[in-house]
Image 1 (cartoon, rainbow, N blue to C red):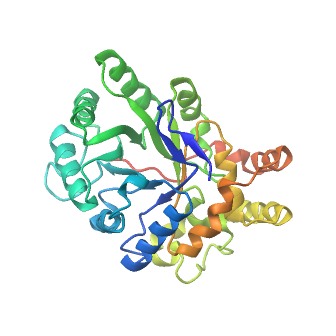
Image 2 (image 1 turned 180 degrees about the vertical axis):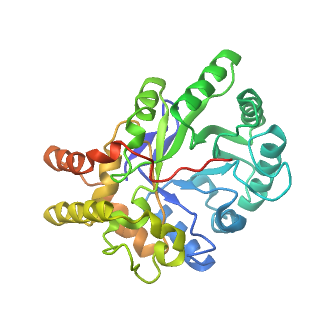
Length: 324
């Protein structure tokens, strides 16, 4: 396993991280626990979750699975998206964040989180309030590092500027949809992160499974796939993305690897990327992707991937989560 610094911080994370939004849903508790233990056994140290994943079940399962193993991982969670119907059940106000951190710590069975991330910008809360609350969390010892998610480049730069001006702990990372099927971060976010020393943690690195090669039609989804279990995902499928998947598959075949491994490896070779989080619904699915962290991508293959995916630098992001 390779390990990279998280942005310009001193914290090192595994090149391949474990995404857990399927835990307690598409992966039951026993399977999820097996996935976590398999990840740790194979050198994966970065585990990413959120307070909303499967109605908090993801955090609960992780907390239970990490009994006796907490010190072996860099544990990350998030808050900010809608948790309930009350007026203070979303966003990044001090009130909401403090409440959600305490609840996450209880579910995770730990007294600190290594990386606490704001799931999306809150248009109704001043950034100063959010950043001061996060700084207090770090000073209290309940949070080690802080990160952003789904921030536009200008929003992230504004937050960094405020932290610098006020002498507050600053964001060391940001999560964003980033893959061969979504290179929109390269327009503004990647240059910003390079300049400011912020690590990028891509989510949807396989475009929700499109880059695995499992989808061959825009109308019919394989049984058990994300598009099968989450019908709203079908709208993400399009002829051009299926063509991209086919091209990636052809290159992967020439290299003797899977489409998933090649797609993940490409991301790991991109500047500012600290850890690529990939989900799993079985331990085998996770181990199949481990090769991505050791595969050396030659210049010709990298250039070919850049070429076939270049058009995805423009247009709309594959996914983004915002509060209305």
